[in-house]
Every structure is written in C-alpha cells, then in structure tokens.
Amino acid sequence: MPRTPSRDPIDSLTSTLLDLHRALLDDTRQDYERIEGPVGGPGDLLALLTQHATFAWLRPLSGLIAELEHAGAAGDDDAVREHVAKLDELLAPGSAFAARTVVVFQRSPDAVMAHAAALRALRATGIVTTQST
Image (cartoon, rainbow, N blue to C red; front, side):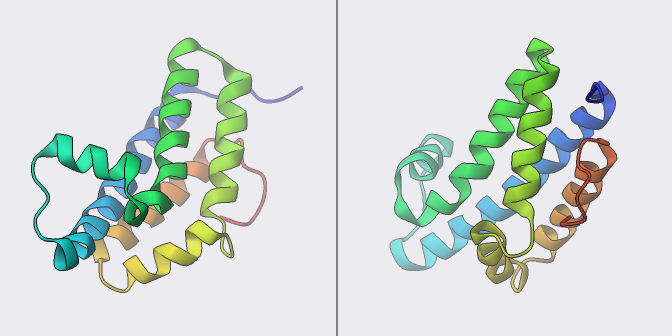
C-alpha cells in the first residue's frame, strides 16, 4: 500500500519549490530584460511567464507546483504522490529542465541554494524512492 503523504513534508516541499521557482524566474527575467528592456509590473511578468517563449521552460515547474498545492489542499494523496513523482522526474539530472537550470546555476547562487533545498524537501516526503535527486 502506498504511503500516505504527511502534510508537513508536502508543505515544506511546496515552499522550497516556490523559492526555486522564484530564483529561476528572477534570473530568466533578468536575462529577458537584457534583451527586451524592463518588465512592467507583476501582471506583465505573469503574462510573460504564461505566454512568452523565453519563459516556456519554467512552465512545467509552475504547473506542477500549482497541481501539488491543489492536490494537497483537496487531500488527494494519490495525486500528491503522482505530482511528487513528476517533480522528481523534472528535477532529475539529465532532464531537459535540469539542463536548462545549469545555465542559471552558473549565474545565480540563490538558484543553486533553492535547488538544493528543493531536492532535500523532495526526498523528505518519503514518496520519492529513486536516487535521481
């Protein structure tokens, strides 16, 4: 029988994923602004995140965070386990997402630290059993 996720590790995972997302988004925004000029307010940044090609690589993480939060709030343990497994795949070395983060890690110590914290929190859920993280 699959283990029922505890709320504390899932809450911690969500929090660390949001920190990682923020660090990756900040770096991507800075990269975008070097070419296109300043982004307006938060609404403009949200539009870029959801629609512009420069930010497309972040959408899988954005979506999984939202889905994990929704499943957790609904108490859907099966969906929580499924989303944690997808996050494990997304963050695994060798994934397309992980390859893109390497570029960001070279410029952003905050992103490196947030990534390490997210991986620790992912393992702490007890759901992930692979060694990819």
